[in-house]
Image 1 (cartoon, rainbow, N blue to C red):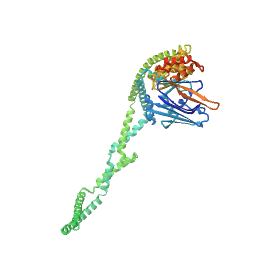
Image 2: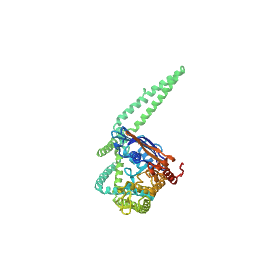
Image 3: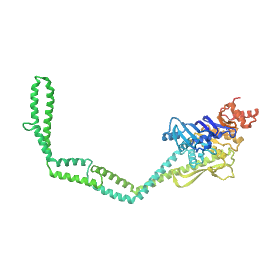
Image 4: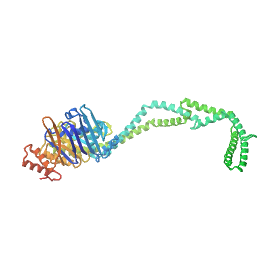
Length: 559
């Protein structure tokens, strides 16, 4: 709900901080005092376009801010999370407007666009009246209201999901038909490539393994000569290294008897002697394994050439041939699945049947809910100075099924018996539109999601018992939602939980608007002014006090 509205240098407001509570709140004041200015400021915070005339004369910049609680608005909290703008259980919206016509906006201290303000605002506040956000005029909002009233939002989501699945299946089928010729050509190329790769039969490590084998076979003679020479130097002949080192170790061991410090050197040399002997034995084994085999060399080189030729044919490195084979097999499997036109056709028909079954169920439920909503709103309109007025929720079949179902939803109204039904968006009178909106909101308040409702001109053209009915309905609505209403009728204001008076002050050179929160005694005075104008008498005050006693929830008024 709206917790705080702060306004600086806006139209005739110098500085104003308005703290708001839950329940039903009214704003009253003399004509021209600036009651609607606060609503205009809020509308700007919710994404309206700024006009330079809204800047207070002589000011360089206007500043507007509003704080909203998010406890009852999970959709807004989720959206803020998605946008990276979430911060605690409240959201602060701020906007500045300067003398050059430039506007900047922030959400929780982070720069925001007007589109973001509008999206967030639509989840937080509904403003009803002329020159205000009127979301009820949008057919999407009307459909959502009907579905919420009917309590079948889960079915709405299932219909949307089935529609997306149907569209995806249809696109797969159509794409397969369109791509049939090119798919056949691609399949032929892939099958030829796979046949080549299967015939070659290379493995992941073959190129590396065969390359090493070729190098060894090609240099076998040199390797044998080198190994033989090394073995002879290490372990064969009179001057072999192992023999010489053995002699040195024996002599040093004898010297240890005279100088024990030589023992460390002896240990090192003995280790070296052992390693030399191991190396000589390893060379002997190596010589036995390596052989000069021209036939094997020719076979290995032929295999390398085959692998290399295949890699060059398909323009990949030799070691990339096994992955290429895997990719080719996977693509052929994909083409096989996508080219199964019969299976794709069955899938599209099954998806369509699933969607239509759910959509028809939704249509049946909507028809029942539309009749009930029409009846209840029409009944509420009779109490709101629209005798014979009626609302009809019209369902029209769509030419093409959509994600929201098989029909469009439109609210059509007639404010009196002789007026034909017309779309709600064409209602000319702002007062009538506000009262119709009030009737709809009262009927649907238990299922609506927007926590704050604001009504401007809701009581235009009414009075007496009808005004009291409006006040009672707003008070009832205030038990479920936060309701703010700009009114000039004492019968409406008397029902409010909280009462603010808007006062214009000034002289020949300056004018400003202030807002005062009224305690019980001050409320009596304000209601008396609204009843009698400037000529307030004891009888008028008594009448005002009686209104409060009759209509306030707590029914307690100071004497």
